[in-house]
Image (cartoon, rainbow, N blue to C red; front, side):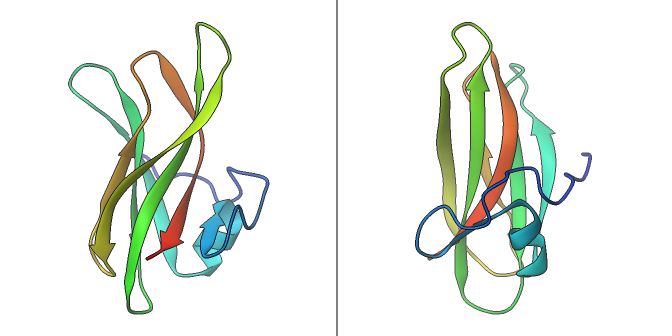
Length: 99
């Protein structure tokens, strides 16, 4: 797994409680690129500071350029939440939603 660079998503706050890129890193979260057995791409996120969080991955389809977000499972801090893009899509960025 390769660590993602902080600031992968330009917006610091996407919605209430959602932090991404550099803001997520400064909020005690780290992300790593992951690739599934069928070639799906995604991000595994881990956060610290107590509580629960949900991973978010911002994706772009290669066939039609559509961008969208997918979310991972609710996870306690210290664990890993993984969010996957569709097959044939690239990861544009990542974030964490405090749950």
